[in-house]
Amino acid sequence: MHQRKVGIFLFDDVEVLDFAGPFEVFAVTVLHRGKPEQFQPFKVTTFSESGQVITARNGLKVIPDYSLENAPDYDILVIPGGQGTRRELHNDKVISWIRGRMEQVELMTSVCTGAFLLAKAGLLDGKQATTHWASIPWMRENFQAVTMLDNVKYVDQGNIISSAGISAGIHMAFHVVRRLLGTEVAQATAKHMEYDIEF
Image 1 (cartoon, rainbow, N blue to C red):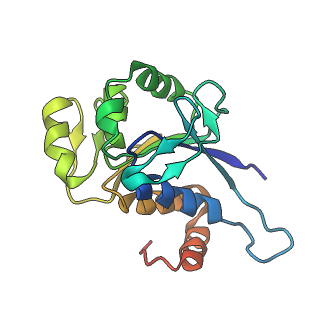
Image 2 (spheres, rainbow, N blue to C red):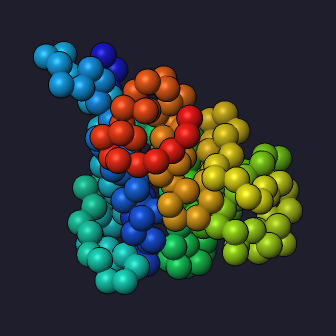
């Protein structure tokens, strides 16, 4: 069976649940749970610009697995949000890296204000997207080529999926699981996590 590589971008002041929520969903997804042929369809790792320790929102310190230089070829990328996205918007190295990976990945995803970075990279031009409700007006003003949607948990545009604020990243991750592996697997994962979600 094919195991997809999921990469989650970390940076200082990243919102904790933005990255930890999708991490948990993908990491605990299992095919044939409890059977001899049990298989993990996702291998989840994290990366940051330098690969050094980052300090997430409210002081949580996290050691990424990789840097931009040695990150593997991912199948799925998760770009989370948080106050740190305001700084990363002006980080040409990060924006260029994200833009360059778009052609290689199966799915590019964002959580909350991670959509800022996708928009800055030009990946959302001509597409629909969403982000945290409080940042939608700012996105409309600064990225007018993007059609921002209100009151949705996520927006699937084929090879790019954006999600709303914080906990919406969990909904987005479940959507990806369902899209790639089917409703039954997504439901089993939600039950394992004791997470209430309608498919």
